[in-house]
Image 1: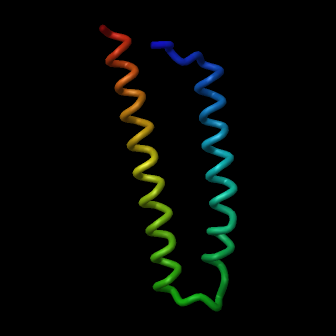
Image 2: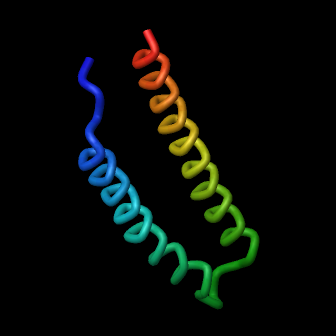
Length: 72
């Protein structure tokens, strides 16, 4: 299996960061909108944070797998 180069890792990080910025701005506007009930805003924030936690745990697990394969 090919080990990822530093430039590939940097590219992946930039893509993920860009995706979160593009998703985060509408979320920010949604939270700031006064016409939406607070419970709905909290629910949407909880969904977004939950998605973020799951994604970060998958990325972490993948890096740990690569590290274990590297040691073999």
